[in-house]
Image (cartoon, rainbow, N blue to C red; front, side, top):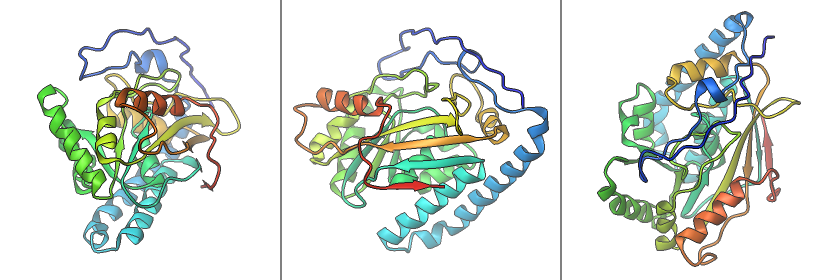
Length: 289
């Protein structure tokens, strides 16, 4: 199997604006390919499988809405784990999130795979950019999940978005956020934006940091699953389904309790530090697929 690696280190540059953060990562400089021409049949089979799983999930949306909360969450977790497995990625989860109650779930952001990975930990309402509404398949799915959409080019809308997040948290929902505001390749990481942490403070709910990491089974870290820069979603999906031996590691870190930080700056810093740890301190439970 041919392994084409790009070792260039990202050059850090300032984001275009404070509210539209961008990572310096690009497919050409940061992302390695683990596929080969011989992998095409396997990739096509995996792509067919994941489309089937997605369509099955879409068909079940009306049924899922009638299930009780615990049963619905269990079904969503199973469906998301099946999606990850269908694209050929092994999932390893260490630690556990509180199963009920308001919770701000935050993680570093590398790939489109991060979304089902976090839903496999605890399903919740995702904070998503408004453009996702227009994406085929992913748009309707995201909207039907109860996502909170944000118009990132409208800074004036930020206080209202924070208040909507706080209202959801007060209602006992989990809200899933990638506070970096952009995807990174995995070798580098951005700083956590502070605004969403204000919602956790206002609602007096805990913050659950989660560290996401991708590697080759039995080997080193890999940037192959990264979805960065101007790359198309289809190109990133194809690279993942073409790869062999991808492992997604989800480290659920100890929860940050309400009242444990004096302000949103300190809370964001604590959550960011937790997601950069290379080992997981919370080992109460683990799941392997």
